[in-house]
Amino acid sequence: MTARPAGAPEPDPGIRDLPSPNQDDRPPGLPVDMLILHYTGMRSGAEAVARLRDPAARVSAHYVVEEDGAVLRLVPEARRAWHAGISHWRGQAGLNGRSIGIEVVNPGHEFGYRPFPALQMAALCDLCLGILARHPIPAINVVAHSDVAPDRKQDPGELFDWEGLAANGVGLWPAAAADPAAEAAADPAAVPALLAAIGYRADLPLPLLVTAFQRHWWPARVDGVADAGTRARMAAVAALAAASA
Image (cartoon, rainbow, N blue to C red; front, side, top):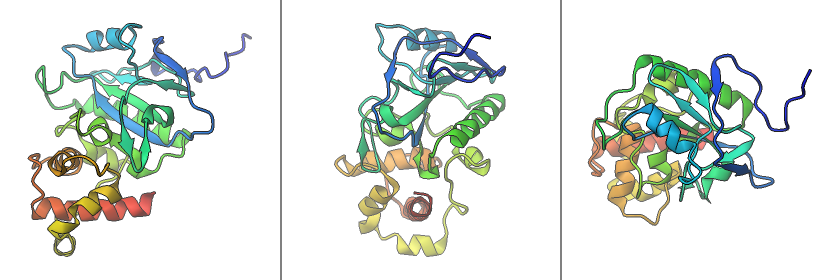
């Protein structure tokens, strides 16, 4: 029997290996404690995969989930993929070294953003649950690219089913959309502190941060305005974050 190379993934008949050269060693001593979800934002899945495997592009992800539910592995989880770029979350920066990155095929806002098919979301959920079983990733660290880079990114966007993932054990979602008690507690002046408690960086314009929060946790309103409903949701997510971290 031929031994697997060090760091090579365990065989999985449901995952197709399509290695990308765009990877390197993780920094020593860093835990893998984040899961960052993206959309590909290109005209087709094939175009996106080609770019993620192009040495000149210098971008990659650990996995790609196609619209039909097929899963591709581009980078072993033990290695660093280059997916998050300049990124911050819960006081940490340069998140590639401590994260798993998944690209979910969708043309994105530039090329005809559309809902994510149920089969794709089911495959993504199964993939995420496997990752969470292998790494110490708290629920508040299952985030969007737009959460960790709100000044640059908007993926996977407001059509992404974060609520469905959370219902199956992937990430956080408040039980109530607007609890009156939470709404009363969420004074407008508390918004920056609530966003910081969730994990957002504090040195960006507030409307950018509110918009990023809404894309993930309040997609019915994505306008950067911290109305009463948005503030109530912020308070609820901040409470969940404190319990999760």
